Length: 88
Image (cartoon, rainbow, N blue to C red; front, side, top):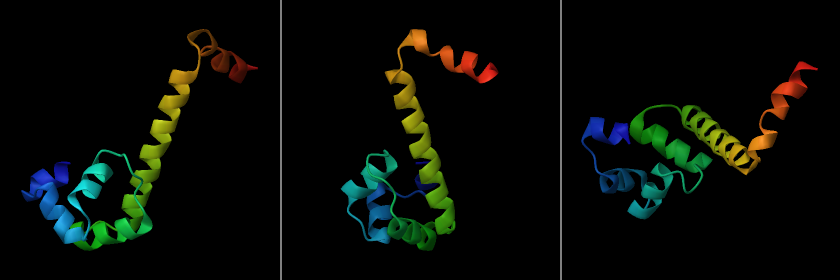
């Protein structure tokens, strides 16, 4: 996480400031657990950016992950069909 590097903090230090376990902070950073409203508010108080900023970033990340999963689940021969259908 670039913000940690900028501040010279470890994940443990961020976890201590947020009141989370280091394991939970690591899972948040890796995108393995979703960012809750509570976590966004804690990030706001610790890092300064508004809770809405963190929640928007979370939603954008989850959308990209979902789109990538869908693309990888679509057979290659079907991928061009959506472009064909959108022209009609």
